[in-house]
Image (cartoon, rainbow, N blue to C red; front, top):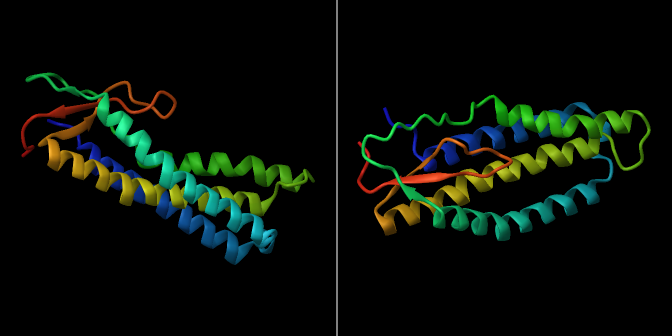
Length: 169
């Protein structure tokens, strides 16, 4: 059995991360008054994240697409897609130190910094699901390939991609 295509995983994992970011951000804004402290800083930082995503994420995706290799006939594809509980967990792990540090009195940290993390995760998830997925789709149409994530891919090492030269069924 073939693993899900890279496009499918970009879309699903991105939407899960975006949904977790949106839900957590909404809960913070609705339930924690301190989350809206330093709103101009939050807006500015999220605008910066948006700009970085617009510039850097397509470059990274194109770089990954240049390093692909064909999947050989009969090759066992044992790589597992990212478990869908991991992106929300990573978001919480990233936000928690800022919230805890703020509660301990560290300047510049707090619930608003946690909101910036969850808002940033919303933006990253949307970029993955809506922008990068479309970029990969265009490349698949142009090259008549279907990309799959190969074993060895990780957040720290990056994504290793392979491709099928035919249409998947």
